[in-house]
Length: 311
Image: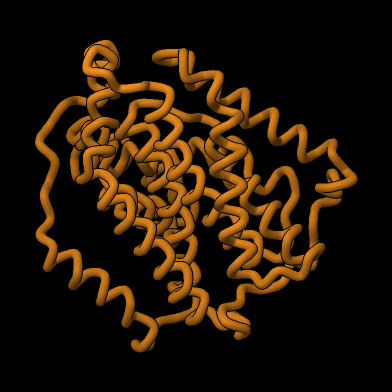
């Protein structure tokens, strides 16, 4: 069962998606402030995390409340590769994604036998375990001091320092991950994921190995989350055990539900809306959170399946 009402998802034509992507790509050529670009950069990073969670929670039905742990693994791996082994930032981010996919899947695999809210509790515990390991493994993670002086983003030997270059880099990475995930969902793997989500007993009867397919979903989702964490580490230049906390996991789940579970475009739209709405309401500083909460309540009341619907 699920608390999201079934509905027919909103289908956006490919040409409309292409026009929207082109519009965001050429946005820095127009006279927009760095503040707007920074806000959208945060939206793209959150969108990558939402892509990871919408695959795990919306497509295969494993709701995770500890997804920020994957961000932390990717961020620390990328930062340590850059600082300790002088790996270029681009390769370090990929390494962070791979480490997050491998280690995250290994940590979450014992919960594959659980169902319903027990999965959420298990993933929440795993997130706390990862945070405590980062806090106490001082010889590697530097403990509560954190890691500072992380090299800036770079690509092919060129440092990405300006907001415009960082915007294009994060946007391009998010688009590539979204295209890969969209292709995955239209393949036989995506149909197998949805079959497991809808009825795991019937899927097992048809010969699907539940643990294997859940592992595949977490591998891809972990890679996307690790890449997002790696980019954030090089963007912030400093991280510690509190940078990626449980609030990040709740925020990602809110984005996924807002856009529509299992919906790739919905995850990105939800990230833009959730990051942009508080900034739009900044003019009413005293009532900003109140207005923001009312908007979410109205959405839950009149559109519980998300903006674009659940797939």
